[in-house]
Amino acid sequence: MIDLKNAIEILRSGGTILYPTDTIWGIGCDATDEEACQKILELKGRSEEKSFILLVDGFPMLQRYIPEFQEVCYDLADFAVKPLTIIYPNAKGLASSVLAKDGSVGIRVTTDPICMKLIRGMRKPLVSTSANLTGDSTPISYPDIKEELKTGVNYIVKDRLKEKCQRTSQIIKIGIKGDVQIIRK
Image 1 (cartoon, rainbow, N blue to C red):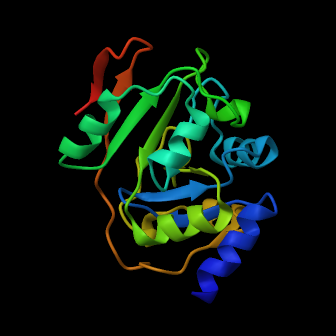
Image 2: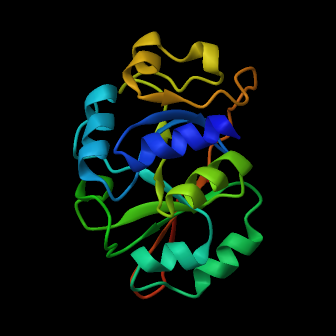
């Protein structure tokens, strides 16, 4: 638990972390902190054109950032057989670099215990981008993560260092009128 307390303090102070998620190893920060998000873009060598996926601890948190929340999203989440990221339109209250050009953002309600503790400790959404440099393949375990990423973050969560993480989330985009588009199965 001390490990997660340290990670939460780093996140609250604008830092970045490397951590296991419900899908892969991720690099994260407070999704409302523009400077922290910029640190991740620089670390990964990632274009500002590409948005981030965010993790929240439940629909109440999600709805604080998505003013036009569609009821169909509850059903999509209930019937999902693997982690589900939904791209929502017109997000608010988030760092501009986590948003796509059209103002949308991909958010996943996580059930992963580590992610839940981090999010609840911050009381804010958590950026969850893959722990790889832009253009590189996504590592499936902690030892596969490049050393420059490990030394480039402010903190590494030491839980599940030997576990393989190789699931991807399904991605669905929701329109303002509730139309559904499958991006990744």
